[in-house]
Length: 130
Image (cartoon, rainbow, N blue to C red; front, top):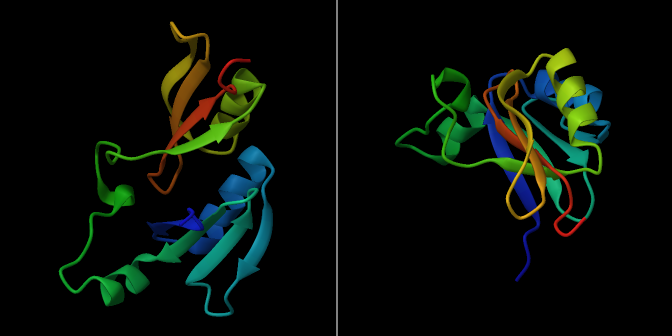
C-alpha cells in the first residue's frame, strides 16, 4: 500500500491548479477537457483537484466544501521547502490568506500556515532535521 494521490474538491479546478503553479511552482500534469479534474506534478504523490460537482456525484450525502467554510477543514496539505518564508510570501502574493506566519517550532522545524483561495489549508514547512 502507498499513498498515490490526494484529491481536493474545489469550486474551480483550473483556478486551483493556477494558484498552486503560481505560488509553489508545481507543473500541470493533467487537466481533463471538462475542466472538472486536474493534477499537478508534485513528486511521488500526485496532488489533484476535482470540481464540487464530481464530489456530489461521488458522495450522495454531500461533502463539506472548504471554500464555503469559515474555518479551515481539519486536514492540511504539507509542502516541504528549505525556504518557508519565501514560499509563504509567494503564496500570499498569489492570493492565499495568512493563518500563521513562519515560526520555528521547538523541534527545530520552520512552519507557517496559509489558506488557498479555494479554502485549502496549507502547511509550509522546512524538512525535518534540517
